[in-house]
Length: 485
Image (cartoon, rainbow, N blue to C red; front, side, top):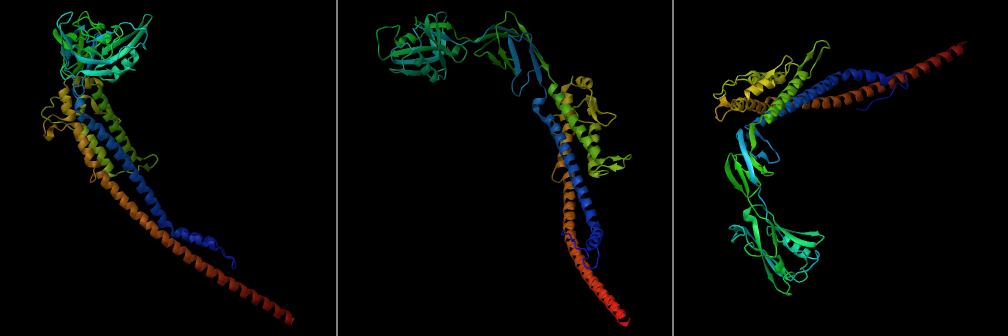
């Protein structure tokens, strides 16, 4: 709004001051509206805090709906160097103890060639065919059985690719289920071959075909052939074998050193052989449940503190919260407390009827707290705890569960037609009306100020003229007196 600065130049009237005082009176309704706008915005902000807190509480309550939360277990092995045990994804082993004896670890087949002068030593051109499978018979083996589903891989070795290092690289690029390397010591260099997977069925044999023959078996490509049933130039350093374990006295063979579901829901990773059984223990693990329960309690208390702060009245300072006596805010607090005390009447809940039965109660300061000893005692029957918190498997409302009730209530309040959204929408509509009225009043104030300025400027002009006329009359009177005297 434009400000007027004119002062009575002709009359001596302080026009600017007069108009300013008059406009201050006119603006009193506008100040009232601005104060109301501040109050409405503060209420919207307060409801935003409650909405955020209730949303957090809903999420904490929803966490109890996770199927992986219930029935969790922890595992220990009396000698962790022999084996480590973990739960398989989405599964939990049944509580109990088991004996585990590792008689053999699963191994890969490894071969090494004769000694060559260096890694750049060359052999003849040709091809190498690698087949995966298992050796049959005793020692030495009497036959070879190809691995089901495996296809022999032929690797062509052309002229210019016959150095030991080049052959190593060709084998590694072939994805034949075998990795190659070169080991060098004071005697020279050897090509080493190792199956990529453990287990009896991941042994391999190598057939060499030479396209050029220099007549020297030691430098021909056949120097890299291997067949365990005959004398071969390649040496076998380790046999491909299965892991052999005893679980509760039962013999189990595994191609891998990781054994899944031999004990349901568990993955056993073997570390070394043991001369005697070690103890494998599966125990109930409620640590995550306790964490989520404490998270819920923290969210509940945080929301309670927010509502208390926004609705309180301080008699000492005679100051009130932005939502003091607001029915929506107070109603949310009341309903939350009611659900804490409310009895759970589900037909499978046993002796656990309320949150207080598992150690969750409201203390003297009005906050939730958890008595761990009482929760531990209740968890002796985890099924009842699950029914109390998350409901049973029945679809009846009686088996809804406390946390599901909290989530359902929060969803109803936070929804588009819920109490919080409805209350906030009402405040926003009130704010919009207030702002519209302020805009209209501002326009009116501009008009009033312009009118007052025009009126007082006119008055100032008239008074200035009167002043000039009065001065002229006075001067004329003085002249007349002088004439007669």
